[in-house]
Image 1 (cartoon, helix red, strand yellow):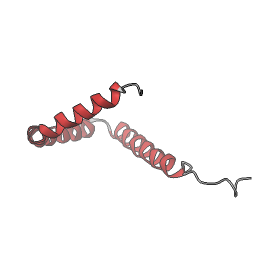
Image 2 (cartoon, rainbow, N blue to C red):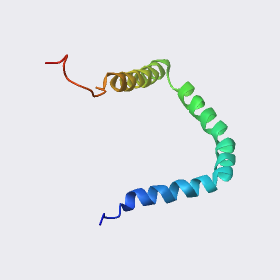
Image 3 (cartoon, helix red, strand yellow):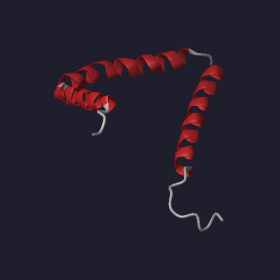
Image 4 (cartoon, rainbow, N blue to C red):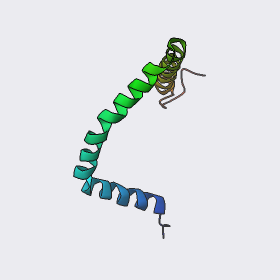
Length: 83
């Protein structure tokens, strides 16, 4: 007899609930997304130019490193070329 994996069951129930409430969630996202993007842009633009450059550069560097790590992750298979 297999034990019950409650984490998977909770995730399935949560996903089903979100799918049932998708219309309400979509309306909320549409109402709030413009305000969030506008406020974030205003906040970054109000910073001094050097700090703004440093924050945006760090963000794009972290994004580049995340993509690089995903692309360089070994995909599996045999090890005939590594030995």
